[in-house]
Image (cartoon, rainbow, N blue to C red; front, side):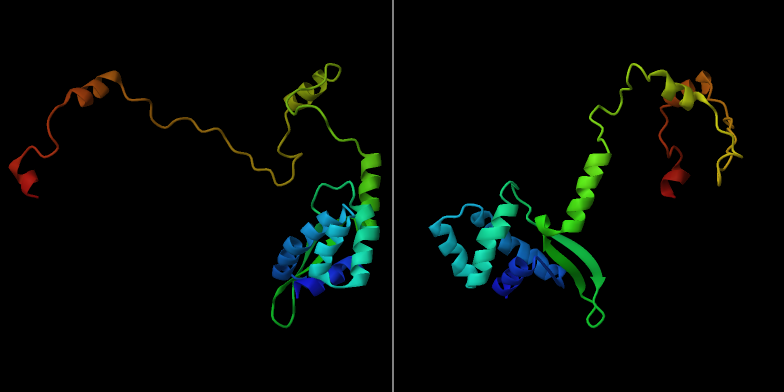
Length: 185
């Protein structure tokens, strides 16, 4: 079953199956994809022992190996779809990562337009050091923030115990049950 699913995955680049089968297929197909990166006669023989489909071997060592040549691992992606209507099994989509053109185009567009932050989180730049402090110091009224609750500050109800009572408690060496009635109870 895993051999047939791996063949379908290589030829179609994406298949729909259950989550449990997809996780097992990932463990089965990723070592084959790693072997396909190095196109030698021995690697072809090892992969052909498990797949036994000439078209999938050609596709694997051809176009798939070219796309995953620079990737160090993680050749497949599992996308959960929800539960199946008949038996309520979790279904998912397993695909080869480098062959999803829509996600690759979106990732390239995002990388080109947005700039990732390289600095540490706590430090602010020297030129813009006063702007965050001024914004943080400005108080926000409860009317400006929707659904905000105004909490009044509470004052302590009782003052801290006096030193004389603390000393009395600490110097008292009487046991808890001092009378005969309390010992029997």
